[in-house]
Image (cartoon, rainbow over all chains, first blue to last red; front, side, top):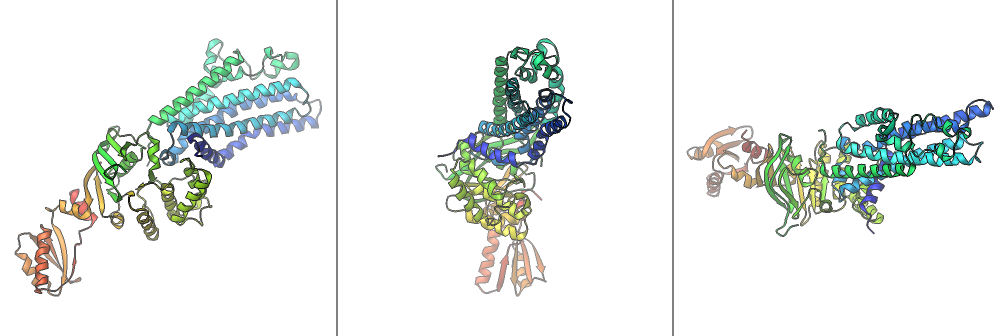
Length: 269
Length: 311
């Protein structure tokens, strides 16, 4: 039975993603929270009674790094590369002269990148959590916290990668745009009061994290464990956050597919 | 193939890059056999090939494959194989992975992918190196791999953009042989080059492109006849060059006569090639002169091209 174009592109691209040098570098970056968790846990075990609680470290350090840096960075480099790499390396000719609808090409490549990133980011987060919480596995609220953290990271990866896939289809310097967007717009506007912060993707992602309303009171480390991530955050309902993120991701991808099917890509000779 | 055997048809085709003209008013029909697209760098050959392969959208006019437009029509690519000019690959793959990956995009089942990849690698003599990383391939191997990806799905239209560029003589001969082998009955092969002897080694059917326009098309001899007002040089080796020269000097169509004593030939510059050869044949048949060899030093693509662009 013939393979659907989307699946064919997904398989081909998944191999390219796994093999690229960029992947090796970012696997190392994604391993940083695990290394950090290991160092902290060894330190805590060596000096009992000293150091921070595992959940506090996980929520403020690991999640802070993963949500506000790792997800953005990986999505930026993998998302923009979906078309930019093919154009810069002048390999776009090969898939472009195959019987593949251009929308299927974009979606297949996006799916390959996102699935790899999800595995990488979520695995790194789960490992860090297990290391830091090794002695508190029975702490039920922590597992809820982990679940919602993974949701925030997962939806963040999906949405940011879709945005940067779109940027890569029409911007020559999409990385520069992405750096400005991630570390300028997103990291600044999310702290603005009122409705303004809702113009960032990060606002919606942080709305997925557990807050006081999730039953994590200060005595249970609730907002205390999130004091760094939820600084000045005025949460929206989680269901609204999921809807907004999915709507944005879909819109970014459809627009990327549309632009890619209309645009002519010229190589620098 | 469309009803009359035309595989590729361009009609009033034009392409601009902003204000820069890439191709202008191209109308051409290309059918079975090898057709050479010839022109200097920047003439518009690659633009034409990118239009044929749907990588660029025509600014004006139409380009069709088997009667169907190419731009944003992916099904057309089942019939087309394209070997790009640029030396670009997914370097972190092996040759076999490169081929199987691209064949996967045609929707073949895995067993067919493996079979086709194996055949294509064998055709370009890369079977032994198939499982090595592409980044370790020589220039000739890379070029052959590029050709193999263009024909692995056995298209009836093969388009090769400067396939001999940068190859050593041995690799060139290999690639020329491969291209000629691929051209079987009914298949269309379009090859571009800016190096004239390369095209000459592949085909006599040529299209001359210059500054985005087609200067001439057809058999090289037909093209030669199009420029019959331009003097044509004929070299004749004979035991009596001066005697032979004397018989032609008085003829109106002969513009000049020169002697190449080292070669033992006399070179005639004539404005009427056919009349000159008629007369020469009569002299030889009447045994007035012995003619050992007749050559046309400028009856090659270079001179045709030079004449047409007014050099």
